[in-house]
Image (cartoon, rainbow, N blue to C red; front, side):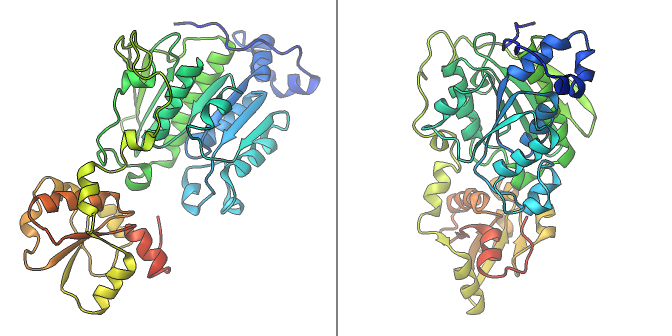
Length: 393
């Protein structure tokens, strides 16, 4: 459905702006008035990572007058495969500062406002209130639900995107005119079911595909042209080069935007709501967790352990802890691999960071492996504490 423009047009365009945006101005649907609306718009991008990078670049190039960036992270070398707003010289630098510098290089006419902080329950309302539109480039469920809840409570529209390996999704959530994120996903997935990009990977160019869709939707909302993805979910399969649109209806029973909402304020703890690990995993790790240094001490002392790497084969090829046997978490959870584990040796599990090994540990405890333990921090801790020469990913 068509919607009215989100912002009023600015008073005028300068000669420099007319030259710069001339290819927009000659599009009848955009024209001078549409470009003036972009100039007068204030857009916040949550995250300057995979999705935030192309989104910020094209929002800046399009002439959005004020761009806000919120990100507390620093640029890491592993980001450069997909986060194209950053460069080699930015490694170790604040992502928000790095992104702002790139935006100023692309379009010095854009005002950039930096929020070099983590978005949380205490600041999200104050920050969101300063902008007309939110572009969500987050990569975790806790922040996604918080962004959605804050946007609904403040009456703000936002453009959402999600990426994983070769698959991407995008939509526009605006409770005043359609569904919110909770209408589509009332509850977060069970802990450990959906790996993060850091665990499962993402094709770098997929970020550009979904990020550009987000900018396209943002421009349509700001200028009032076309039909935004309100009430529609765009699903993209990069391997099949296939786009599908799925209708998403407003849920009258939605806990947030439904007829009788039960969520009337921001949650106290979104991390707890989404659950980094299941309760079973939390219980299993109590008194059954060792550090990477302790694992090294056990190995050096010749302790009779059976070290299991529960990551995926592709990760095992990148880097591994010496002596580890690869048995993916899924094979342990399903019970398929239980028969291959020795009953007369202490089983030690590890993954990349400790989340998947905690879930696998819960399955082993339930199957009778009472002495099994897992390595806190996984391979990343091993690299940091034991062998820094190994590559991190």
